Image (cartoon, rainbow, N blue to C red; front, side, top):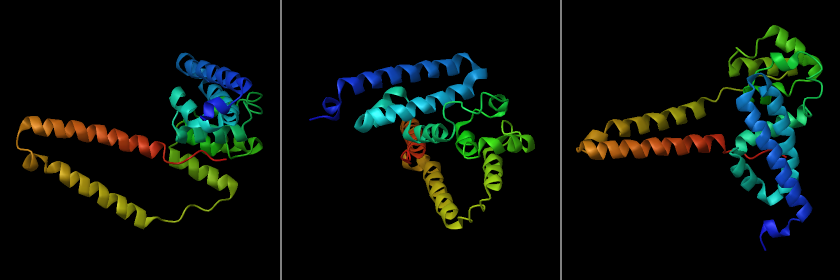
Length: 205
């Protein structure tokens, strides 16, 4: 029996309503730039509720919404720390926070009582992601991550190896038509790699 048939009519109706609410907020992201952050927070809250109802169809629901598991994970973290926009809408914090989800994923870890102070010392809208992460770590008293030379070396070698192969396409495929086809396939493959990098981590419980 499929996961869908196991779910009650009430749950399926709840899923439908939550999906519709999320789509509505996604549409607001396009229409109202000034309300982007509030939309992100509300999407996170609704995704959190959707996950509880969807259960085994969670990934299916995300696919239908066009949200990758990695992005959903960020939304869920924001929802856990900022319940809807509680504590933010009552101050000027909403207008001072960035809309970048990765930045928000880190900033939501800071207690609302300390968030204003961080925003006073760093313009998180203009700061780089690395600067925001470093500022959050400092506020939370976390040590910076240890150097990962082995990882960087491995990845650099992987990139150099692939680049070298690409540069030899002319030798392997002398015909221009073959070279163009190979480049098209490589471009499509790189898109797949990029998507995999964005969705490799599962959403946290």
